[in-house]
Image 1 (cartoon, rainbow, N blue to C red):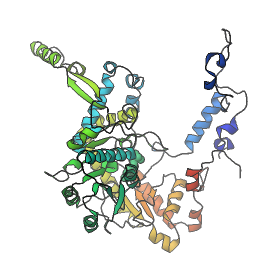
Image 2 (cartoon, protein in one colour):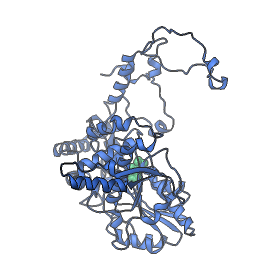
Image 3 (cartoon, protein in one colour):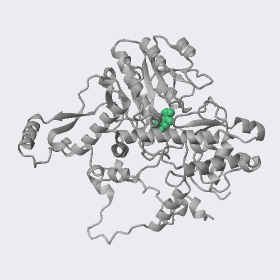
Image 4 (cartoon, helix red, strand yellow):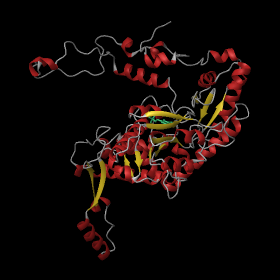
Length: 515
Ligand SMILES: *Cc1c(COP(=O)(O)O)cnc(C)c1O
């Protein structure tokens, strides 16, 4: 049973005069702000902040936090979002005072550890993607898409080619066409086949010398690896276009295949973004901070945002140190900071400029760095192998009662369809998603991709056990057997049942009313 305090806004809980902290009597003469500051900087009235005691504030926010679902509290198979467990050691690493207490305006010599981390992150992401250069600045996957398309635009401008179109398959994430439009391109849809792959004849029909970029998600949002990837890349390149990989699904292929290698000898992806908050276990959801680093080929590197982190060898010192070590075997090998100096390079005449303040969302990048270094190359490969194994296990069980139109096998996720159930019993994907909340499971992604009717996109990730997958399957099956009327008003156990989702997002009402 919840009490109403849980659903009252903090403003409704406010009582004039309540305080979380009280200051001691003032022992210096008081003077008004107006005497200290120019009049235009002083507000007419204090801000209307809620007034509460400290325990009331803590209870309010802790209770609110329990109304939500999270990876730490529930299974969260939200397809495309890779809601894997967020290891707590990453949090500890990112919170170390040597990182957390830095200020980006400090002199570079006092930021060497942070810059080394960022430099190694650039190198690591390049290695994983098989590409040559990296920018850590973009603040989210979608921002990475936009940045890479601006880089592509700058490249074509520079080589004197006018290209106005970006091709996007019909099952792409909505951010792809949106990024294309924001970067000033016309977004042109390319069809996919009934099997969920790029329709090569539609691609051929739309590919011309006006096409700047083909944006592809591979594995796709259906959890399928594009079998014609090499042909697609070669065709686009033959027309002078670039391949952009939407890297949101990198969790399926880490250490197994590299986008830059997809057409050996001819080049695969020319650019890609990562979602460290998905693939590399950064916490996300609720609009929290993410990051969207991008990697590109050598010819696109000059256009990347500035600054990039560069490393120079402290050559003279290095030789001296190495000789020292040779002469005296008991000496420890020279420390990285003795060998190299890291700095920020702003001197890139062809850069598109900055896309984000300072160096990007380094807190998120730090967590991702800790995750990558914890696993190492073999560990990252195992992450993907287990993610694919878990998804295929779940697929093989779920497909018995919720058809999976595209494929008996998948990569890290699959898309089931409730359309049969909708026809037979009037149970829609949305009803199942809502009812899952009553059973303590976060819903899968529903109604995406748009190419599958009543789509339910399920991504278990590698961090779930077989017991969890079995229990989830059983609940999912039970729901498909339930009475449609019960499902139409689900969820029954949450503080709010079915808000008007569009209006809730566009015109949020942040106060509670008892009706
Ligand atoms: C999540 C996602 C994006 C956008 O990434 P954000 O970090 O949310 O901006 C783009 N494409 C696909 C396929 C995604 O799943």
